[in-house]
Image 1 (tube, helix red, strand yellow):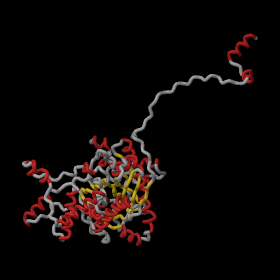
Image 2 (image 1 turned 180 degrees about the vertical axis):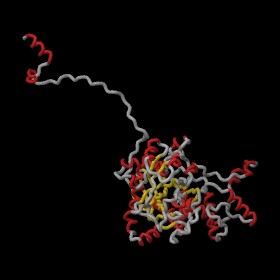
Image 3 (image 1 turned 30 degrees about the vertical axis):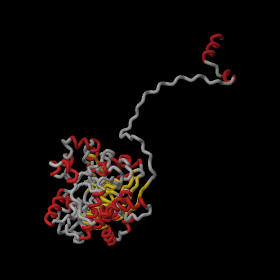
Image 4 (image 1 turned 90 degrees about the vertical axis):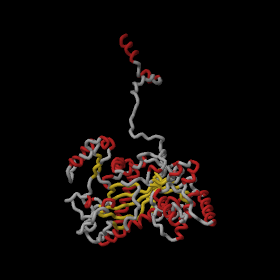
Length: 491
């Protein structure tokens, strides 16, 4: 499971660990020089460029266009700079400081110690170096300014006082999906068993018993041993067992899954954007149920990239184990099934994501001016019906293959189009993101308990009411019991 990527455009970002650069060893012996020595020397720029930097910074601050990025996201950085945003650098890398200081000592130059870029190529063109120097100076000028756009894949890097600690686990773990999708009947008449493989929590006694009635493909004792003797795993329900999709759709007798991106820009009202482009990930060996090896059944790139494809695998499947969606459509064309991508696969993926988000909506705190980019993994059965396997927060953006090099850059740029450009102009181009769900906001009570119970006391029997006034006719016809007894005794 990848780490969490949370993006904040509000005023919380400036309260994080940003603002602390690498400590300088001389500051301990010279306290009065601590502040100036904490900042490495500024890059050399002529006076005109310095004036230009000040003008650009003043404009950015006035328009609240100050951002910070933690991690290697050059596409996001360049996209924001192109929109007039100025970066407030979060942390200076000690390795970069030492490397650039060493280079400066050798050459006698006064180049920037921190370039504000993620690539390590020091032999760029002079024009690019000059741009880096300019951005470096601008970053120093906004050092004490408030951050209005914050991009990170590390939860600890942001102020978590106002965040629900485990809110993403309700969506991005198998346990969370397993529990929440059981509540789908409160939101829709759909059956989760039609798009999410049957799933059980091994640590829950009743669910464990229900699972043992199920036929297994491998040794049951090995599966149950995972939770035996570890009270933490039992208490936190960290292990689930899920039904295996034994009849998957294969490409040249090889198993694959689909990585599909989607963007949530608001949880109340729930607002979901579906990305039109996706990609396929193959296993390294042909599919068979005779082997339980991960090279046959798992398609995660983090696992398959360490394995060497089998020689017997079809030569049409590339060595990097990835296809674009256009390559998949071409393959479907050879099977006369291309139309099913738009009529079966895409609608099924959209429905599954909306259902999953609906069931987790009440458990995730809605924070305005924030958004989240997710990566969902799907498998297709022989009818091309999509099955949701899991939802990942912080999907990898590494250009590991030619397919991801193009698509990951595109999805990052289109994310900025949705969350920034569309805020300025509602009709702005959103790239390949498509709005697939948005409902009216729901008024949320101040407190929603997880376990409901009824408390009260027994109501006593009510006192008898006085007789109603009736007409004279009714009185003569219906005498009171006491008067009736008196008359009978006189006779």
